[in-house]
Image (cartoon, rainbow, N blue to C red; front, side, top):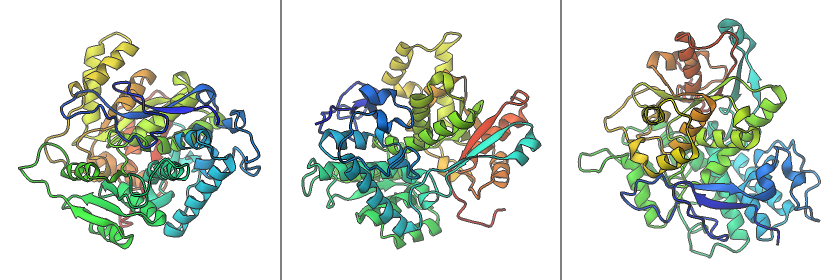
Length: 462
C-alpha cells in the first residue's frame, strides 16, 4: 500500500482525523458556543506538498494501472490535478489503481454531462483588449458561467462526490451508513449552489433535500423540482435564533444523518478541495502568461475565495500570488468588518503565525453574523456571515490586498460590462475592480483579474 499523501486536520484546534475517516466533514471537537474557528482542511504530505501542476509523474505511484492516455493537459480538472486531491491520495492509499480512479472520475463526469449537457472542463484565462484600452489596465478573466449548472459551485460538490465514491469502493462506507446510496444529501441554498447540488444529485442518483427561503426565485425552485430535489421552505420568523433559518434547518437534517452537500467549509470542509481545481487552473495560466497584480474575487460564504487562495499559495507561493481583493456589497460585508478588526489589532506590525493562530481561537471577535435584513441585486453573496473567512482574510493580509465593498450602481455597471453573460453576483468581482478604478486607487498600468462565476438566468438585463 502506498504511503499516505494527505490527511484531514482542523485548522482551528489541530484535531487530526484517523486515516480511514475519509468523511470527516466537521471537526468533532466543535461544540455549541465554542469560539474556535473549526474547519476541516486537507493537508498534503511529503512529495505531494511540493508538486507543481504537472506533478502526476513525480508521485511514486507508477504501476501497471496508470492510464497512458492521461496527460498533464487533460481537459477534465479532476483528472488533470488529481495528484493534489484528497480523494486521489486516499484512493491510492487504500489500494485503488491510478487508472481505476481516472475511470471513476470519467464515469461520474459522463453522468453529469448527460444530466445537464456539459461535464467538468478546464476554463480558460482570457484577456479583454477592448476593456484594457478603455481602462488603461491589462485585464484578464476566467469564465465559470460555462461550467456545470452555470457556475463554479459544482466544482466544490463534485470533489465530494468523487471522495464518497472512493470511500465506498475501497470498503470504508457500510450499507445504510453516512455516505452510502441510502444516505440523503442536504443543502441550504436558493441559487447556484442549490442548482449545482441538484444537477449532481440527479446524475449521481442520490436523494437531495434543499432548504430555501420563502422568497426564493420561482425559476430556481422550478428547476430544482424538475431535477427531483425535495424542497423545504424556511421562513425567517422572530422566534428563531440568530442566523440564516435555512442553515439552521439544514443543520438539523445533517444531525439526523444527511450528508452536508453544501459549499460552506464549516459545515463540510471537504468541499474546499474540489474548489481548488479552479485555483490550480489560475496558477497554470499565470505561470504561462503572467500573474496579474490584483485578483478580485466575490465573496458570500467564502468557499470560492478560500479554495482559490489556498490553491494559489500551494502552487505559486505567497510571493508569486497577486494581491487578493474580496468583494462584498455595501449592504452585507461581514468579511470586510472582520478584516478591519484584524487590522486594528495588528497595527503597524506584520502579522505573525502566532497572531493568526490566536485569531482562529476567537472567531467571534472578528466574524459576526449580519443581524438585519439586507437587499442587493447580487443575491448570491448576501450570506449572513462569511463562513470561510479566515483563509481569505489571511491571504489578503499576506498579499497586500484588501476587501472592497461595492454599491448597487457598481454591481449594475459590472453586469453590463461583463464579457460573459454573468449575473450581478457572478460579475461582482468586476464591480470591485471598477470601484478601485472609480476611487483612483490603481497605479497606472497595474493589471487586474476577475472571476465570472454565475450565469445570468434572466437574459433581460435592466
